[in-house]
Image (tube, rainbow, N blue to C red):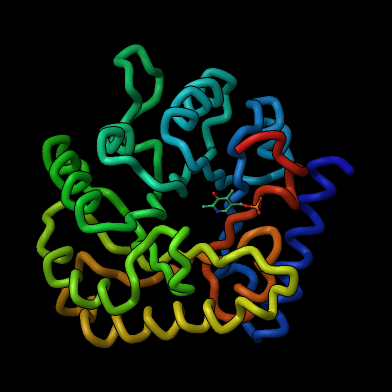
Length: 249
Ligand SMILES: *Cc1c(COP(=O)(O)O)cnc(C)c1O
C-alpha cells in the first residue's frame, strides 16, 4: 500500500463515520501523526494532499519543521500532540536554535496541556514572546493511572485559574483512550469528553470568556477514529493507518 492509498482509505472511513452521525466531513480535521517517520514520508503524505501533521516530541518536531521548510513544504500545519516536560516547555514556543529557518508560530495547536503547571509555564513563555498559544486541555476520562491529563472534576476546579492566565487560548479538549480490541469499548469515554465540553461551554461561555472558544474535540487514533467521529470528534490523530507500524516510539 502506498501512503496516498492509505490516506485515501482513512479519509473515506472518516467520511462514512461522519455520514453515520449526520455530520459533515468538512468539520473534521485529520492530523497525520508522523512521529518517528522521516521527512521523505512526510513529503509523500503532503504531496497526497495532507496538510496537518502531528508530532509528540518537541525535540523531534523542530528538526522536521526546519527540514520541511527547507524542502519547500510550506503549507504544512504542525500540531504538538505529546506530553510536554516542564523543562522543555520553551520548545513549544519556537525552535531551539536561532539558525532555524522557521518562525516561532510554526505550531498551530498544542493538544496536550495536561496539568496546571505546564499551563502556567506556557502562558509565561508565551507572554514573554508576545505570542499567545492555541491549546487544548488534555483530559484523562478513563481514569487509567498511566494516562496523562486532568480528571474531569479537577479540570472544572482548575479552570478559573487557567482562564486567568494571560496568554493561552483554550480551543477545546483532547483525550487519549486506552488501547482496547473493540473500539466500542471506548465509545463511552468519547461521549464523556463531548459532554464535558458541552458543560464547559455552559459554565465558561465564550461570550464571557473570549479566551475560551471550546470548539474542538481532539479524539480518536488508528484503532478508534471512526467511533470518535460518531461521538463528535473535530480532530482525529492518525499515525499507523497512514504510515504503517512504528519501529520505535
Ligand atoms: C502516536 C499518537 C497518535 C497516533 O497513534 P496511532 O495509533 O498510530 O494512530 C495519536 N495521538 C497521540 C497523542 C500519539 O502520541
